[in-house]
Length: 403
Ligand code: MG
Image (cartoon, rainbow, N blue to C red; front, side):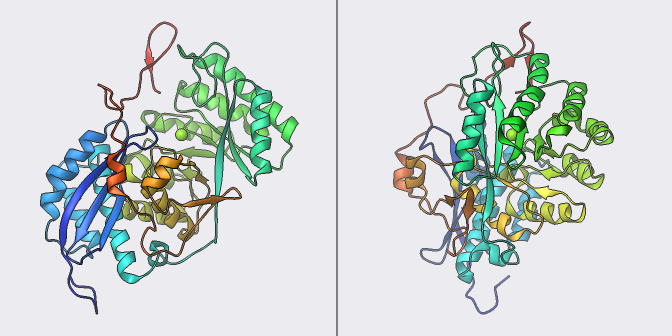
């Protein structure tokens, strides 16, 4: 359907662009149109299975969408979603996200507005970020938190190594095995130390990364209650969603969940039953900006705040899409930060600006970020027979566990 007062447009190409400027495999989708120079970009980064996403884009979405009017974002999303008959997996959702975000980028460029204006305008002029601090011991960790506070950060994620174990998110952690019990004993001691050293001013966060048995997660959430965390992340795996009810019944530690969620069946019940406080999905893995704005609206009605997943394996295009939602969504909670390396910033001109512990929106039309395709090609995916697969994490007896 035509947009009023504007000439009809057609999609003339859809392609996946692969690049790894700082060693992380990124996939973005470029949607080109019949208007010379008008194109959009979207994040389709599923860094553990990037080549499967590329096939979904190039072999399936491209032929399906050629000739369509890029103005019809919702209809293109719904028809593409249904065109696989079986749907809602991470590969197909990331491919859809690449197209979906690119269509929002095109609509913003056509309107001469940043995408957040199309989403209702700004609720805030900057987006508070949380930084990642980690240490081999508590003192090194506290020093890092202080360094972030000195730079203007008010929210910091804290991870410390368990001596002798391969600990998620902790700098200097040894490679090797992992055991949940020593970790569960360490974390409350870590927060007691941090509160004693740092006081109550700074907001502290922690990521369990779904590594411990559910009943130990219930116990850990209870034990951490006195330290007033901003949130406790991924205390449980998606497979153990029902245990969130038990955590909720026993303590008021704020719960963040969702970076592994793919579809509505996983997140709707947790929001509806008020069992989590922050929704932390990887926006491209649930299907893109269209799905994320609906999810944010649903969360608003249940008092759940947003905390979109924002590590280095969300491309700068994805961070720019997160930023649009972060400024426009009233029930914004926090944004995870990643400071991209110099190579990535060169490949993606217009990478969101980070300053004073915040990400700052620009007034550039669309998502506000571009890609230098020739430069992107100079950073191919690293040579690795497993193409980015997550390495197994094992207990001392050899049992593989969730990562
Ligand atoms: Mg996480």
